[in-house]
Image (cartoon, rainbow, N blue to C red):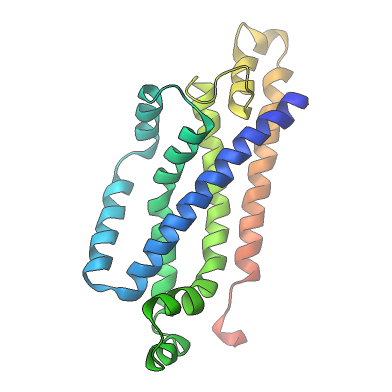
Length: 214
């Protein structure tokens, strides 16, 4: 139990920190691309498509294999870079749906600057969708960290993470002798991911503004 608690700290730090960094980077670029349009939107949108076309898991495996020594900071940076394009596209699409609304047009007519419109008018309306998608991103990051740890490419022992605890449980014939070593952290990961997905769905439902309710 103590190792699962300590290991979950590592996995949650990587998950939330990497998605937080990706949310900031993808949020600023997505707001800018969705509102300004033109060549800025074209270049950023094309760049995100190029990055998304490359297999993310393969890129992470290659970088992790060569970027040694491995650390919590390095894992966080790698996951943040990998998650930025997806969050950029979500925030860009949400920004496009609000960019032509009356309150944005009114702010522009009154002489508001681009940055004021982005952060005072558009950002509050984009945040709910971005946060709900970001929680799913945290779940994906935890799965990726667990997969890397299982392959021996994450935080090294004796520092515990959920993935390397599972890896310990399948070494030295432990699945036959004591399957609980791998069972309990695997069950914990399952419950954690279900909770994050339910939270994301609840947030999306809570902040989903329908035209019929206006």
